[in-house]
Image (cartoon, rainbow, N blue to C red; front, side):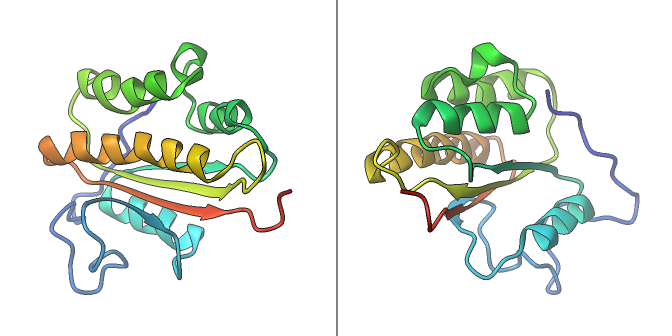
Length: 154
């Protein structure tokens, strides 16, 4: 599932330096990607020694397709990606029990804006990641999630 990234000795995990891309972003948050670029976020995760989890959901139109995209992209075993509760357990308890974690930077790109994945479905998915951010905050582990919406989905 998730492998601990290799951290170079000169890297500082947290707190962030004043030149860090994420210096103004709380450690445990779910927010719009806004002005951040995926490549820059990935580079920052590597610099900090954090897991970088990326899912492009541009081809998904339903909840099941979104979960499948996340499951495949994050290399989550299928039983954990069947529903929101299972995904929550995977992102929290299962990973926590696997050992010490350095931190997470998650990007959910192009979440659908479609009839079968409406505002309520999107909020339910983002709640899964908010719950995970809260879980990791209690463990004092950074868990930042950035998301964007697919603008042309129908």
